[in-house]
Image (cartoon, rainbow, N blue to C red; front, side):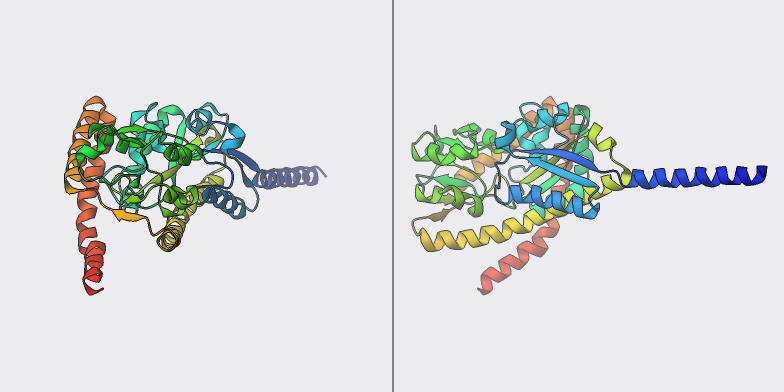
Length: 358
């Protein structure tokens, strides 16, 4: 009887352990995500919804993401602080918005005259990009992951044609990030205005020019109705949004849910890139058909050379002030040199050949 009692106790203990493990495996986790964008904002907002859906489906309902848009939390440019403080578990925004708080963050969105989307993704995932990004965000109790790419952004809408550097002197333009600093160095007066106010600011001459994203999102805001000159890009050749995660929230998740979260972020980021390509192509076709007043322009060589020179000077100044910034700049420059050599004999060569044939 004693042996039978001991065996029964052992069986019960094993059963209890199994039941406990099963219960733990079925625990659900709800993460609150704050995004810079308004409700149902196209492409950017689609990305967070797609991410949440993927995470829930892959986890069989154990991982749920609750999204609060800017109309709910009322702080579109407060994502960094809210996630850092733990008010939200996650955020979706753009890294260069935090350059006033942590200057090194701006390198992880896009840099003037920098990498294309494919080149930059390779730097993130095969080069030092992810490691350096965590080095920047780690001290703030944050993790950062690529959150979706727009591809090459257009250079902006201008009410007057830019024929020389003289035309930029005193020109008031909405343009954020490092590009705003470059433009300032060549005479422009840059400013950052929330998306909802851009059309009115341009219409009322509060600003003379506006850079937003590309045809898909620009068409929606109506810039083509009041500005005739649409300039090609140079400043953001691979604009990457970001997912921010509070480290404490991350550490509470089981390893399998952390892996699912990483996968959902990576897939939804890639999906945003192809969605952007498709949407921009369709929007540009619409603009060409319905707004024949719009002219595609390239900045004159003299302007490009001045901006390129200003960009290099600013990078040297930033590197001199921060060892970490210097390390990031060198990593990007070295990777760009290597990857661009191949881009030149592959994609560039193909496009040049097709241009000749067509």
